[in-house]
Amino acid sequence: MKIIDISWPISSDMTAYKDKKVVAIEHTKIFERDHARESVLRLGAHTGTHIDAPAHFLADGALLDQQPLANTVGPCTVIDMTHINDCVDAAALQACALNASDIVLFKTRNSALAATAPFDPNFVYVAADAAQYLVTCGVKAVGIDYLGIERNQPDHATHTVLLGNGIAVIEGLRLAHVQPGSYFLWCLPLAVQGVEAAPARAILISVRGE
Ligand SMILES: [Zn+2]
Image 1: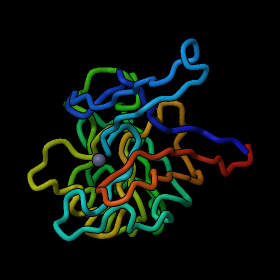
Image 2: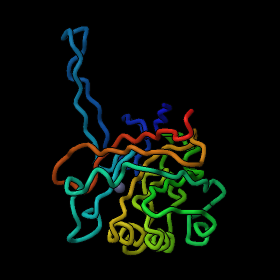
Image 3: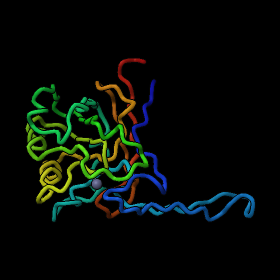
């Protein structure tokens, strides 16, 4: 079984959305002094690889702890969108074979950016008409290889269309080392209670028997 880690490495110098740095890793016990090592982490809920719950942008949306883990576990297709310069729109998706109940991950030129690079405001995002198209296809979850799935769209249309139709949103994936194709995804959020998002570890399992 081949495990491919597609999680964004968490560190105090990692890329932060709009460069709002909130990650702090404090080593409260060091071995030379305390004969043990302990650390305290301070993280935003949207740090690195994370899952957004409907409550992120919907007034009555469910919190992350009210969402089934099955939303982000299952058969998955990594789709090559590295030729896209600006946004993944419905026209770009119409050329792809999307399966209902599938989890769809977009590999874009975003994945070529270093994990500690300054925030790129021109990152490739998913347009609202693509979100609508994904609803029509009946996919289960959508993932993107940057810290947001949309830039500054009015009314957060991409998020609200996806989350409002029960499609999970995974942001902050790292896909440069992943061949497009079919996999099995495990993406499990930290079990934080009462929040709209949480960091997650995401791995792909190759289904081609490698
Ligand atoms: Zn988010």
